[in-house]
Length: 269
Image 1 (cartoon, rainbow, N blue to C red):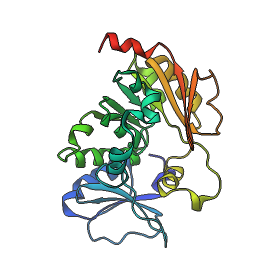
Image 2: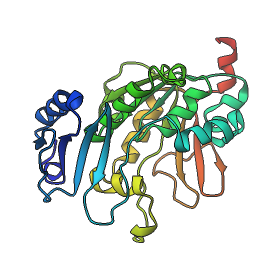
Image 3: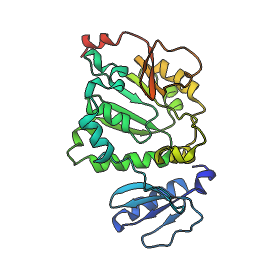
């Protein structure tokens, strides 16, 4: 882990059952570790918190928003499951589910796993790639939490790999999924108070995806049927090959790079 991150975030266990896991992560990534009941040095603006088997990131500055986790239980995730629109959602149409097929999907920019969870809830087998060890730890914790819950059947279709997506894709000898899904970090306006807390966290701890063109190029070589890129509605497309078509919503759009007709999957399903 970079020295930049080691000065931004420390690790703390808030419950005894999490202490060994928290310490192991800190040692692996050379981060400062605080055991249960220890006083954290206020030098760190972020804490990776281990509490009751759920991992979250806490911002320490006065007036900061609440913890950020990747938990799939309750909250926005439950609301989207109930009211999201099923296969009528734009993400479902973009990835091909509206064609009567259920493609395998590689989410190469997993983040907090929200889009991957939606796709898994619609029956897709989803592999999640996440290059940030911090965000990857949040995802791993969320998947463990969900395993024995009433959404365990959904998260059983989600497999996490912590790796740099471009490098990982380039190392593969053949196609890795029917559809590769990308949602790279996009530069946001300076009105930071208007940016939701999750995005502020990503901007600070992960940074922008300056290699999105290289990632798209790698994805196009390793997808069987299409690559789908989620972008802000008015943002430029990723430089390079132009998308085959676009689905445009109120705040975002999906750039679709069609390699073969995804309807062909019907013949192999």
